[in-house]
Length: 107
Image (spheres, rainbow, N blue to C red):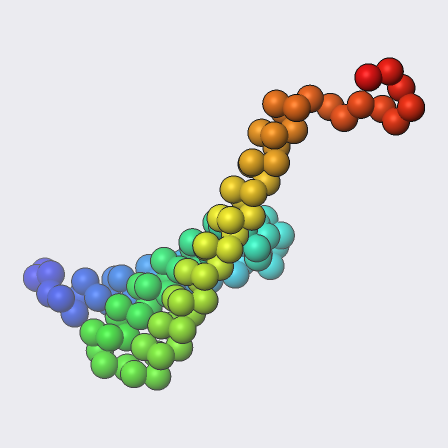
């Protein structure tokens, strides 16, 4: 069997479709949050695969849809990563500072 660019793009498209479905299933079954970095990365990779396939076959409505999903997922990754980074920074600060002193107790 000869490996052609059509076959490569079809495989990329199918992988993208599977990733989109897996991401949705993970959120629907509450295995991951829709606000998580993992969900947005899965969606980003799936949208990238579907966009590449749609470009290869010149399916312009699909290019537009999946390109838009790609942008939204990229923004979601950045926003979710900022939240994770902020939580880590707060946690590290709390560990360095120690537990808060009790109100009215000795300092």
